[in-house]
Length: 195
Image 1 (tube, rainbow, N blue to C red):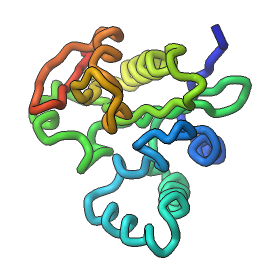
Image 2 (image 1 turned 60 degrees about the vertical axis):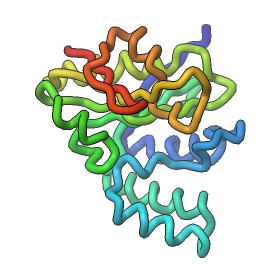
Image 3 (image 1 turned 90 degrees about the vertical axis):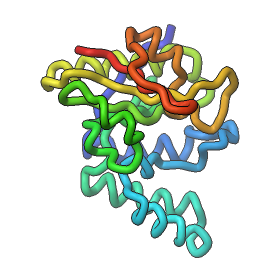
Protein backbone atom coordinates (compact mmCIF):
# COMPACT_ATOMS: atom_id res chain seq x y z
CA UNK A 1 0.00 0.00 0.00
CA UNK A 2 1.31 3.41 -0.95
CA UNK A 3 1.58 6.02 1.79
CA UNK A 4 -0.97 8.69 0.98
CA UNK A 5 -1.11 11.95 2.95
CA UNK A 6 -4.29 14.01 3.24
CA UNK A 7 -3.74 17.74 3.78
CA UNK A 8 -6.29 20.53 4.22
CA UNK A 9 -6.10 23.11 1.44
CA UNK A 10 -4.22 26.22 2.57
CA UNK A 11 -2.93 29.15 0.54
CA UNK A 12 0.52 27.52 0.59
CA UNK A 13 -0.98 24.55 -1.29
CA UNK A 14 -2.85 26.54 -3.97
CA UNK A 15 -0.15 25.77 -6.56
CA UNK A 16 -0.51 22.04 -5.80
CA UNK A 17 -4.28 22.32 -6.26
CA UNK A 18 -3.84 23.92 -9.69
CA UNK A 19 -1.11 21.44 -10.61
CA UNK A 20 -3.43 18.53 -9.82
CA UNK A 21 -6.21 19.87 -12.05
CA UNK A 22 -3.73 20.96 -14.75
CA UNK A 23 -1.85 17.65 -15.04
CA UNK A 24 -3.49 14.66 -13.33
CA UNK A 25 -7.24 15.11 -12.93
CA UNK A 26 -9.45 13.85 -15.77
CA UNK A 27 -6.61 12.33 -17.79
CA UNK A 28 -8.93 9.39 -18.52
CA UNK A 29 -11.48 11.51 -20.45
CA UNK A 30 -13.78 11.56 -17.44
CA UNK A 31 -17.05 13.31 -18.44
CA UNK A 32 -16.67 15.74 -15.50
CA UNK A 33 -13.49 17.27 -16.90
CA UNK A 34 -12.03 19.65 -17.47
CA UNK A 35 -12.89 21.00 -14.08
CA UNK A 36 -11.24 22.96 -11.30
CA UNK A 37 -14.09 22.33 -8.84
CA UNK A 38 -15.34 25.91 -8.92
CA UNK A 39 -19.10 25.32 -9.35
CA UNK A 40 -19.88 24.12 -5.80
CA UNK A 41 -18.74 27.47 -4.43
CA UNK A 42 -20.49 29.67 -7.00
CA UNK A 43 -24.06 30.81 -7.35
CA UNK A 44 -26.03 30.46 -10.58
CA UNK A 45 -25.20 33.98 -11.75
CA UNK A 46 -21.44 33.47 -11.27
CA UNK A 47 -21.58 30.16 -13.14
CA UNK A 48 -23.44 31.75 -16.07
CA UNK A 49 -20.83 34.52 -16.25
CA UNK A 50 -18.02 31.96 -16.23
CA UNK A 51 -19.68 29.80 -18.91
CA UNK A 52 -20.19 32.88 -21.11
CA UNK A 53 -16.39 33.20 -21.29
CA UNK A 54 -15.80 29.63 -22.54
CA UNK A 55 -15.98 30.54 -26.24
CA UNK A 56 -13.65 33.49 -25.91
CA UNK A 57 -10.97 32.00 -23.71
CA UNK A 58 -11.47 28.21 -23.82
CA UNK A 59 -13.17 26.02 -21.24
CA UNK A 60 -10.13 24.83 -19.30
CA UNK A 61 -8.45 28.23 -19.38
CA UNK A 62 -11.60 29.97 -18.11
CA UNK A 63 -12.15 27.41 -15.35
CA UNK A 64 -8.51 27.75 -14.28
CA UNK A 65 -8.77 31.56 -14.22
CA UNK A 66 -11.85 31.41 -11.99
CA UNK A 67 -10.28 28.78 -9.73
CA UNK A 68 -7.15 30.89 -9.33
CA UNK A 69 -9.21 33.90 -8.29
CA UNK A 70 -11.32 31.86 -5.91
CA UNK A 71 -8.21 30.31 -4.34
CA UNK A 72 -6.69 33.77 -3.86
CA UNK A 73 -9.90 34.90 -2.11
CA UNK A 74 -9.99 31.70 0.02
CA UNK A 75 -13.37 30.61 -1.37
CA UNK A 76 -12.50 27.00 -2.25
CA UNK A 77 -12.11 24.66 0.73
CA UNK A 78 -11.23 21.01 1.02
CA UNK A 79 -8.40 18.53 1.05
CA UNK A 80 -5.61 17.39 -1.25
CA UNK A 81 -4.21 13.86 -1.31
CA UNK A 82 -0.48 13.46 -1.84
CA UNK A 83 1.79 10.64 -2.86
CA UNK A 84 5.52 11.41 -2.75
CA UNK A 85 4.81 15.15 -2.42
CA UNK A 86 2.67 15.21 -5.59
CA UNK A 87 -1.01 16.10 -5.40
CA UNK A 88 -3.03 13.15 -6.68
CA UNK A 89 -6.55 13.81 -5.40
CA UNK A 90 -9.04 16.43 -4.27
CA UNK A 91 -12.05 16.48 -1.94
CA UNK A 92 -14.23 19.60 -1.80
CA UNK A 93 -15.54 19.79 1.78
CA UNK A 94 -16.65 22.72 3.90
CA UNK A 95 -19.50 24.11 5.97
CA UNK A 96 -22.85 23.45 4.29
CA UNK A 97 -23.37 27.23 3.98
CA UNK A 98 -20.36 27.42 1.62
CA UNK A 99 -22.41 25.68 -1.06
CA UNK A 100 -25.36 28.03 -1.55
CA UNK A 101 -26.56 26.64 -4.87
CA UNK A 102 -24.97 23.22 -4.82
CA UNK A 103 -26.32 21.34 -1.80
CA UNK A 104 -29.89 20.25 -2.60
CA UNK A 105 -32.59 22.26 -0.85
CA UNK A 106 -34.23 19.15 0.60
CA UNK A 107 -30.93 18.42 2.37
CA UNK A 108 -30.79 21.90 3.88
CA UNK A 109 -34.26 21.40 5.33
CA UNK A 110 -33.18 18.42 7.46
CA UNK A 111 -29.82 19.40 8.94
CA UNK A 112 -29.14 18.30 12.49
CA UNK A 113 -27.01 21.19 13.66
CA UNK A 114 -23.73 22.56 12.38
CA UNK A 115 -23.01 20.49 9.25
CA UNK A 116 -19.90 19.88 7.17
CA UNK A 117 -20.65 18.89 3.56
CA UNK A 118 -18.61 16.75 1.18
CA UNK A 119 -19.59 17.69 -2.36
CA UNK A 120 -16.86 16.47 -4.68
CA UNK A 121 -14.05 13.95 -5.12
CA UNK A 122 -11.54 13.72 -7.94
CA UNK A 123 -8.67 11.26 -7.85
CA UNK A 124 -6.03 10.81 -10.53
CA UNK A 125 -6.99 7.71 -12.55
CA UNK A 126 -3.90 5.68 -11.65
CA UNK A 127 -4.63 6.14 -7.92
CA UNK A 128 -8.31 5.17 -7.91
CA UNK A 129 -9.38 2.09 -5.98
CA UNK A 130 -6.69 2.60 -3.33
CA UNK A 131 -8.95 3.90 -0.56
CA UNK A 132 -8.18 7.58 -1.09
CA UNK A 133 -11.82 8.68 -1.07
CA UNK A 134 -12.28 6.79 2.21
CA UNK A 135 -9.17 8.51 3.61
CA UNK A 136 -10.65 11.87 2.60
CA UNK A 137 -13.90 11.07 4.42
CA UNK A 138 -12.05 9.95 7.55
CA UNK A 139 -10.04 13.18 7.61
CA UNK A 140 -13.10 15.37 6.98
CA UNK A 141 -14.94 13.67 9.85
CA UNK A 142 -11.99 13.98 12.23
CA UNK A 143 -11.48 17.66 11.44
CA UNK A 144 -15.21 18.44 11.55
CA UNK A 145 -15.54 16.85 14.99
CA UNK A 146 -12.57 18.83 16.31
CA UNK A 147 -14.18 22.04 15.02
CA UNK A 148 -17.47 21.38 16.81
CA UNK A 149 -19.58 20.15 13.89
CA UNK A 150 -22.59 17.99 14.70
CA UNK A 151 -22.49 15.99 11.46
CA UNK A 152 -20.85 15.41 8.10
CA UNK A 153 -23.00 14.87 5.01
CA UNK A 154 -22.44 13.63 1.49
CA UNK A 155 -24.89 13.75 -1.41
CA UNK A 156 -24.64 10.51 -3.35
CA UNK A 157 -26.38 9.78 -6.63
CA UNK A 158 -27.91 6.33 -6.94
CA UNK A 159 -26.45 4.39 -9.82
CA UNK A 160 -24.83 1.01 -10.41
CA UNK A 161 -22.69 2.40 -13.22
CA UNK A 162 -20.08 5.14 -13.39
CA UNK A 163 -21.81 8.31 -14.48
CA UNK A 164 -21.50 12.08 -14.55
CA UNK A 165 -22.39 12.33 -10.87
CA UNK A 166 -19.71 10.01 -9.48
CA UNK A 167 -17.77 13.07 -8.41
CA UNK A 168 -20.12 13.28 -5.40
CA UNK A 169 -19.14 9.81 -4.24
CA UNK A 170 -21.17 6.61 -4.52
CA UNK A 171 -23.71 5.54 -1.90
CA UNK A 172 -21.61 2.54 -0.84
CA UNK A 173 -18.56 4.77 -0.13
CA UNK A 174 -20.48 6.72 2.50
CA UNK A 175 -22.16 3.58 3.85
CA UNK A 176 -18.76 1.94 4.32
CA UNK A 177 -17.62 5.02 6.31
CA UNK A 178 -20.53 4.70 8.75
CA UNK A 179 -22.88 7.22 7.14
CA UNK A 180 -26.61 6.50 7.06
CA UNK A 181 -29.25 7.55 4.58
CA UNK A 182 -31.42 10.31 6.05
CA UNK A 183 -33.33 11.51 2.97
CA UNK A 184 -33.84 10.72 -0.69
CA UNK A 185 -35.29 12.72 -3.53
CA UNK A 186 -35.38 11.20 -6.99
CA UNK A 187 -31.91 9.69 -7.44
CA UNK A 188 -30.06 11.81 -4.86
CA UNK A 189 -29.49 10.63 -1.32
CA UNK A 190 -28.37 12.56 1.75
CA UNK A 191 -25.87 10.41 3.63
CA UNK A 192 -25.03 11.59 7.16
CA UNK A 193 -22.63 10.70 9.91
CA UNK A 194 -23.41 12.19 13.30
CA UNK A 195 -20.19 13.05 15.10
